[in-house]
Image (cartoon, rainbow, N blue to C red; front, side, top):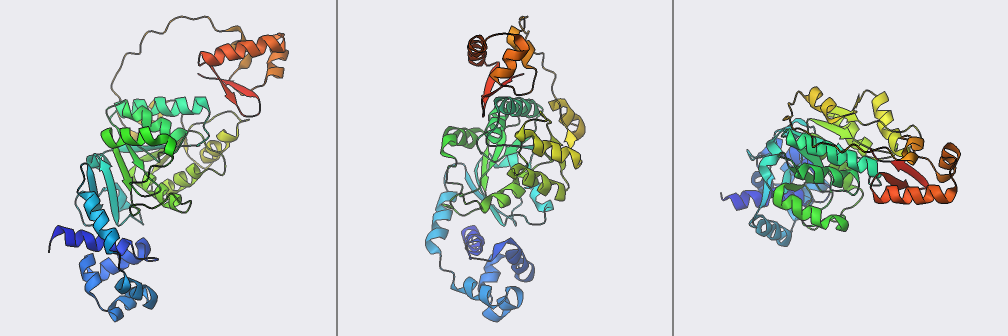
Length: 358
């Protein structure tokens, strides 16, 4: 039997509405490869998945979608890997609900390498994004592959930092592999396709529906040795990823922040639940027993700290509080803040708040 026929069988079963991963694995356990499942009779199928699903399997006519997927897999840098393939990521085989197949663009070998997931808020602060990018760069230099979800904010910053190092990055998508989402990350999508790997379990053309993202998150954590949460609110999907990782036996790391910031509360909750508190990239490397290459930092120019920064501290604050602390007028403080923001030393936060960037 040709490889295309076998692959077509896998694709066809993943297109059956309502079958899902659990039902598909039951069928594989009873019948073997998908071609044998599809050759089975209605009664035999019904004994495993029930009458309704048995009828759907036998009635499934998605030839156009199957041909489109097979044609897509012939493209340069494209690959479809199934549970039966030796190239299937070993880490994913350890989770209770591994995807039946993966659509991959880019370097599929990255999925077999030691990796760390970095996730966090889409509405990241400037400091949070800088932390994610800098951490990811150090981890990548230590030959860890960075896994994230290509979302705005922390995810995007982690991917960018990882592309600067030797370990590269994997983006796990919440829609079809051919659907670029969010559109603002189109350039990053292209860069990862060229120098990293894009991964999706969803059929081609699948829109990024909200219900897809919890499934996407279990793959992010499943591919990695651990998950680092950089910024997250209490209702953040990043906490879902972290808790899935804990169920999968992965290490959980969290970066603490200001007690006044909503984007720190999710990380603080994880730390209370037992996540390892992270103040530097070395904290994670030590825990994972990974040795980073010694790189001499560039000489830092000795610069006198700006007068206003001395009064800001590291928590968010507004103009009124800075005026009280410094004795300066609102006009002077506002002008100083604008200059510091242009220099990349201060970031504007919602609600008229400002925060210095380390």
